[in-house]
Length: 174
Image (cartoon, rainbow, N blue to C red):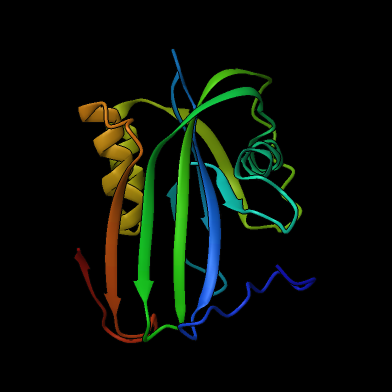
């Protein structure tokens, strides 16, 4: 990744985003973060983010979760699932690798240097489903499959996005 955090352009002409996502669950529920978008809207997701050049997925994930939530993860399992999003009209390809925290400590304290995360909290299954209603299907579907159906075998969820973010889009699974 370049200094300005814009991912490189791949051979297909698309920006290649490499993202790590963290599933952190304990007796309080699932840890979710609220992300504020440039257009002023917000959406909830598990913590995580772009893996920086020179980082492994797990190192980048550990850093991102700590920055976004204050939680320090000592051990991860996974990848529990992967996500690939092909969005040629929007000019990007997104690859996500999700891991589950198996050992962690700390309390919720947001210190996101990017200023994107505005809230973080542990929520029960019903609250998680409600908060995630406005999130992208590539965030919600794999996460709920993991939580509801014990999907943790590294399977890949593929999505195709037609149209630009500012115009009506069609999202399909492939």
